[in-house]
Length: 277
Image 1 (tube, rainbow, N blue to C red):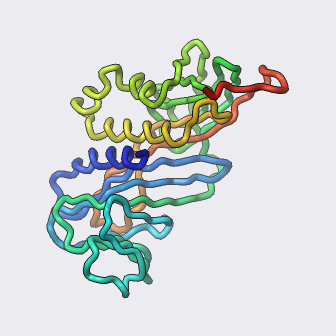
Image 2: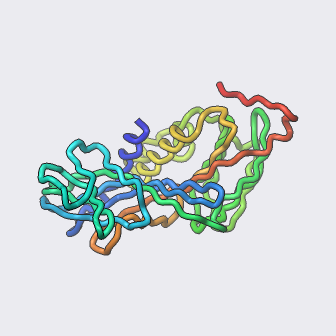
Image 3: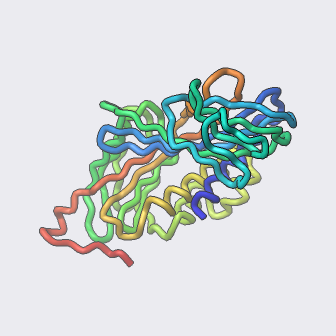
């Protein structure tokens, strides 16, 4: 269900290139920062405006390619491919590529990919003090991107930071916290109580629907009620996914940067028990 949710977001923004003359891709990247390691998990789709075979080559830095929602695919050495497949992920001398065999016009072929890299200065610095019913502190954006719609969650409460530019620090006041009642409570706070009208009927439909799917995916797959760890995440403005190699493919990218954190619980004494209900 979680993967279906995030690929729904991918589906909704693939139509951004409705007048194209070459294959195009749409990618949603969830980037996890953790102790000097940046993990970029990409969920994407490939389409072509024509009914014909075509090939898309991938950047060698990415790994763990997986197809989704397609039974008739092939994954293996390019020399041993049969002709019955719909599309194939090929591992050859020139790297990894996706070969679509007589693909239908504008049919989506879905994939996921992962890349890890070491980082020395890029980070989201979280200094949060928490007790049983609230938290407060600062969040500093030391990434390479301005962040928008930043969400900080811990122990059934969350805060929204509308914008957090590169190098800036924002203070979270415990009096501004909102009770966390699932991902819907967060997307409602961002898009309003009439959120689905805002998302699907507004001028930024493709962007907002993708963002909504990504935030729901992050909440539902990475955060548990009462988790001893908190999580902060936000949209990276201008983020570009570099998964496709070459210049003949148009790309649309959306990136969400996330960071888990452990708050300071010293105010609770030596032993504390968080509400995990």
